[in-house]
Image 1: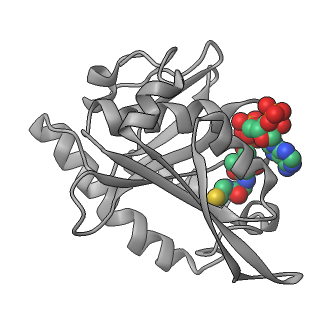
Image 2: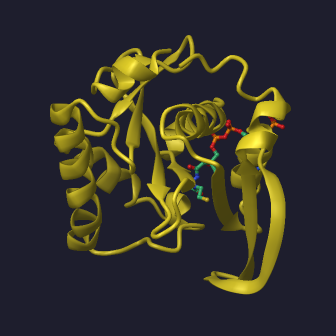
Amino acid sequence: MSFAAFTKGQRVALTEEFTIALIQAGDFKDIILMLDNPKVTEYLFFAPAPEEVYQGYFGPIIADITQAIADGTASEAPVAIIQDHRGRFMGMAGLSKVMFLVGNYDVGYQLPEHAWGKGVATAACRYMTAYAFQVLGAHKVAADCYASNTGSYKTLEKCGFIVEGRQVSYYRSSEGFDDRLLYGLTQTQYSQSGVAEGVVG
Ligand SMILES: CC(C)(COP(=O)(O)OP(=O)(O)OC[C@H]1O[C@@H](n2cnc3c(N)ncnc32)[C@H](O)[C@@H]1OP(=O)(O)O)[C@@H](O)C(=O)NCCC(=O)NCCS
């Protein structure tokens, strides 16, 4: 794994089975296809939505990342695409900078159904969290999820995140309402957790 090569836009090894690279314009079609599955969007507050909304969200992110690669700098909102060794889309993971707060980032991940249950989310979340602390100089990375989204909060816990709060009936769901779980990890907690081991930047 190489953060330097990843930052330059190169596809690098994530695990023995999967690779990871910064998003490119051509990846958008895989994202649209993934978000067309109600099982994927069940716990996503921003989906389903019309394709123009996704374009409006991802367009500027892809443009920013493309510019950062051209400038030789690290984007502060890196979105990464995971593939298997045949080049099949296995999901995405991203960091977003919290507005106005220096050193604060949020992490998120979404996988198409065929990629579930293979450890992809854990590997990708671990990689992006390491990238936030080791490359972007984060002092705090946070994440949130629906309380019913067991796969998501287990992923966060496997990556060392600590539950910091619960907002009751925050999200609308097919069942009525669901709580929002708030997770976080400080730079100090991250260094002491041992989660960083195995993620070589
Ligand atoms: C939630 C999601 C990211 C999990 O991805 P994944 O690659 O299958 O997760 P991993 O294989 O890394 O598994 C992490 C842990 O969660 C558990 N897990 C994963 N999916 C689960 C599920 N549906 N129910 C219960 N546990 C689950 C795994 O067993 C593993 O725990 P373990 O090591 O103790 O067995 C994936 O299902 C997904 O993308 N869903 C749709 C989009 C979404 O909800 N994104 C998160 C928004 S916050």
